[in-house]
Structure formats: C-alpha cells, structure tokens
Length: 172
Image (cartoon, rainbow, N blue to C red):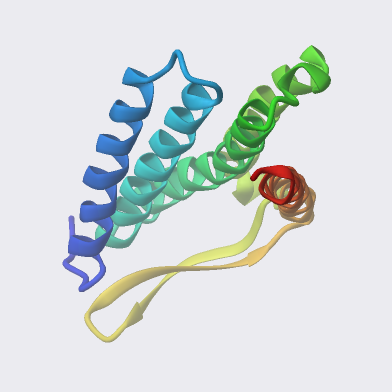
C-alpha cells in the first residue's frame, strides 16, 4: 500500500519545520503580517505532507486524491504569501476584500476538477500509474485548467516579490 522513497525523510522534516514556523508565527499574530505568514507556513507543511503521501502511496486513487490536495495547497501557498507581503508592507487594506476572499476560495476549484479528471480532463489527462524501478509513480499530462492556476500563482508570487522589494528599498 505504501512505498519508501529517499525523499520522504526530507519532506517529513519540512512538514515539522514548517509546522513549527507556523505555530511560532501565529503566536506573534499581533505583529503585522504574521497571521498570513503562519498560514503560508502551514501551507508549506501541508504541501510537503501531501507530496510525501502522493509519492509513498501505490494506489492510483490515493495518489490522485493527495495530488489534488497538493495542487490546492500550492495555490493557497502563493495566495497567502501575497497576502502576507501585502500585510507586512502595510498594503493589506489596498487589496479589496473580494480579492482577498477570492484568493482563498478559488483554489477550491481544483478539488472537484482534479477528482473528476477521468471524465473532464480539465486538470490532468491520461492519468496512469507507471512502474519506475521499484516505485509506482503517477504519470499524467496537464489539462487546460492547470495553466489558469499557474498564472494565478505566478501573479501572486510576482506581486508579493514587488511589494517586498519595494519595502526593502525604502527601509533604512
């Protein structure tokens, strides 16, 4: 049911470290941006855990389920990092409330579209489990919806980077 990979210990270490960072960030939630920092660290922990289970599992449906959660947390991570950067740099109030809400709700579209990928092909196409050495790996082709989420994540990361560089450039 499960298989060992050399990546599992490293991924599980990231889960632990990111969880600790999330907890410590949340403890300092009264500071500017720390709640979104804690959310971003929790997303990294969840992403690493979902990747570890995706790699370790052998069953196609289990791999697909955790890959779905992996995709969802990828988008949440980028959105929460952007909201952290906006809050940390003092620009959080400039981000309209519907945009902040949308950034938290839009990634949920990944769940039904990935789980129904066999019939829709919106996220993944030609999904199959292949044997690579002693490992059972999930192999697939990207569907069209993935590129919309890739664009959203890159936009969030670019905007966060701009905000943080502007803050660094104007600080003493």
